[in-house]
Image 1 (cartoon, rainbow, N blue to C red):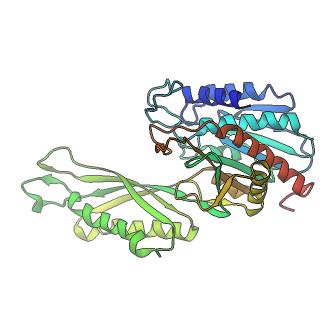
Image 2: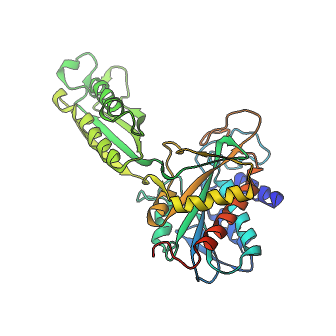
Image 3: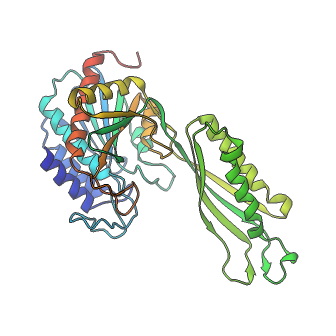
Length: 389
């Protein structure tokens, strides 16, 4: 299937669509799924999502998930199949994920023995939330897609590993993601007379130092966590002290208790401005939880890898402090995500979320094979037993 998988992936790559805007992507996915006579296709899930169902609902049900959305990045790969949409690019591999899941659907449609059910979820909006601050995974959960599901599996292409390498991990493997927006507010004034008012810029220094000390001094060095300030804006002229400074950033951690502690300490960091004559406003936007990979589901993934590709190397290590909204799905049903090596063999770095991201397309049939084998292995291994029983 390599040629078809490559054609599908390049089509998705050339015509990327942002979160909750995957209209043409969803139409094409439904069209290709419709080629599989045994798969029932539903569209319009959470807006643009597509679900295919193979089987009659008897026995265990496994959900295989791919995300479809792109990022607001201007592509700089120079590839023949580069994005034709200015400022929009598949820089996180969702084009590959979608093509791989279509491949798995075709493989299973040809070989499925009917002793279980497989759902193929093509999910919108993994990258960005809607106006209510909610990404695609919670929206498809609200639509009832997880009803009756016993296990969920997803993969993510991995640019720090090559084809033939896989990374997987039991338990907490990716971070929870929270965002913050804060305003440090003073009175402002004339640059020649700073003593007549309160200066939010002068308050910024101790606030930033306090924020940086949360991970460096408040948390144990053994904890996996980070706070990053990504945006600072304030002022409009050289001789005017602004009334306010606006900061935005992200907080990431593995442990739920650490997550709550960071939020508490961030509030304390901004409260420093009060004895300095200022005040502040702080808004926390909670994102996805930490990804908690189920050991039993991972066992099926590992067995599929060893059976299908016995020469592959498996790196058992957490994936880092990136976030994934598949974590919402894994919080509702036993689930696991694994990382599939995709780096091109030329040694050039093509990181996720960069304008030069690209993949070695030899990973596409590997991913399709592993998803389909994992689904069948889970169904056969656990027979009629539902994991919640």
